[in-house]
Length: 406
Image (tube, rainbow, N blue to C red; front, side):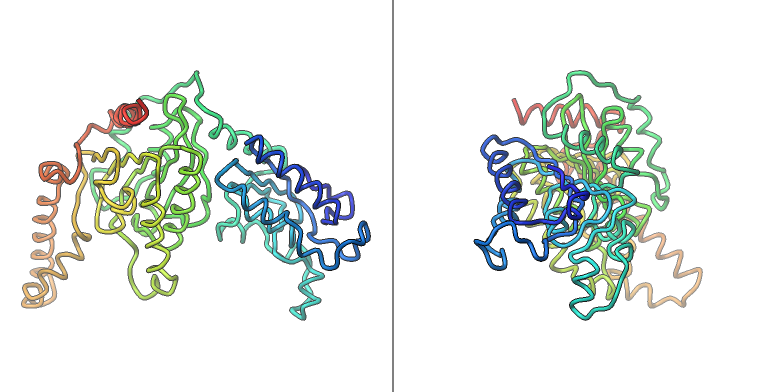
């Protein structure tokens, strides 16, 4: 469905809603996906198409569109101005795509000014830079043609297995995570190497940047990917990252897509600034979303697997995953090593004058905890199922998912 901006600025009148309601009903009964181009100015002031309503607040368009969530895939595409009712439909879609020349807001200039909130140009309301950074837009496109291509690709993940596929040399995975545990690396290179060639489509790249979410294929089979990025926050799961992952795994579950979790996190982000973001509620939501999953989760710990953050990445517990494995450099603990030493050995550290001697003791204690928490140790206590060669990761995931679906 396409909102035509050349007709009354794409605004929504009585018969406009009737047409939307009709196609929603048809799509729901037929269980077919819906792609909506949302450009438009929202409700139509002074609409005189019908004299059988007053404010039009009894229209079923918005509730019907929302009710389709989880039943048929819904993709919203926007180019240009998208305000009020059009924006509500855009924001309620499963996947949102917008061009660089998009402005999206729950009210346009007239409504804002009418509410006594000031006078603004339409280009000042919800520009793409804002809406991508805050998570409203999942994918930013160059233009409308590019947005359409991205919508086609996104739609494909809900339409079954590709029979033809190719993948990269899996031995490359052995060199993508640095041996030094303090160094960051590019998690998207790991994902792109692991998946079928050109199959990865990321959602929300500018929002919750410590968490990567997106679709990929393994031997043609579509899967959802959640992964920690070590570049911002050292891989810690912050409130926005948890929100992002929660919404994504619920989307995957609704349409039967298995989830692959590539875990490398020191745990949930902590501290006073983190709490100002509502971390307790928003991080806990990831456990709630995971507990309701009906699709399998395969967890691969690439390096760090600490605390509640690692458990949340694995579906709520390492035991909840269909299969949980680690690369040889994997390390585990109830909390990050440095924090555990500062907390557990506070007396010993405080007994030394600040300087080289205290630093040496601190490094020694961290090293001892690292040895205790190695992947092989975790496997020996059955906290994970196996320690695997990185080059075997793809095969391990495919076999695990095949066993579940057999």
